[in-house]
Length: 349
Image (cartoon, rainbow, N blue to C red; front, side, top):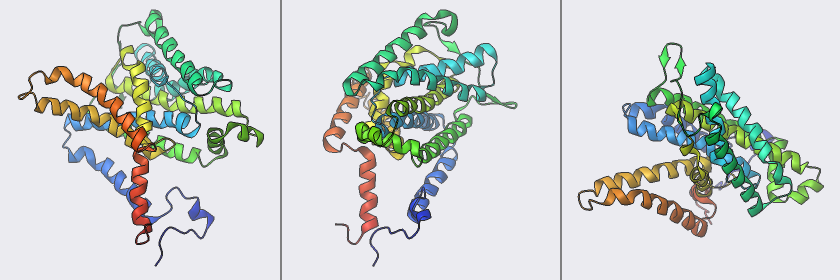
């Protein structure tokens, strides 16, 4: 009896999905994504949550490229999302650029800004690099709130609803397809990135940057590239938020957002594309669950609504602590353990 997976060719060993079970799981997931809007009957709330998960997945994958795959800590996720959102919003609202064109433009501009703030990574590591990216968070938000002539300052920037032909994409159902198409494309591009020498260089820097440099890896250039690639996808996230919400305001891109996305990849699993999806889903659904729980308990505890925001903040911290203690590798490790158990059965030991 065969227990495990054995490859007999390089083609099967290098495939994105190596076994028929992996291909089946991927097919079922794609089928679920395609069927979900019809299963919920175009109800706005479930579609809104799924759209939030899709947008968060793109941002979490972008952050995971930098933190999980390259080992460069970042606390500036919210600010880089703001760059993408304001770039897309300003180009659409003030210059009439088509919304679909503003997304790659915003992503490229955010990549340039991310590479600029990645320059200190040559000399800084760990806590010091985290402080440098935190400074980037504060600098960018300060610029956004004080550059009135460009961003509008603290006032909200209203973005016209995206159009495809004569169809206005201003509903959760219609925008759902845009979000998840870009989320799937992001996952595919990232998976293939780490099959190239650039991705392998990122991983070598994460594991031991000195050894990578000895092997001929230009550490500084690849660190800047990691910041740029990560910020590119974060810029896509910001642009999607601008077009999906229709309003861009700096309150949506504070340090709390940066911590939230860092929590996503920690809980989901560092250095994992599927872990980014798990973390994004978990951290998006947890506040919704607590909110619905508070509403259901309103009759028993009338003051429950006042405690829900504090309960959400406390739950974020508690969940992160529990995962760091009980399962540091996140939900992806739990999922892998389940898969490995059945893959190696009946010799699961």
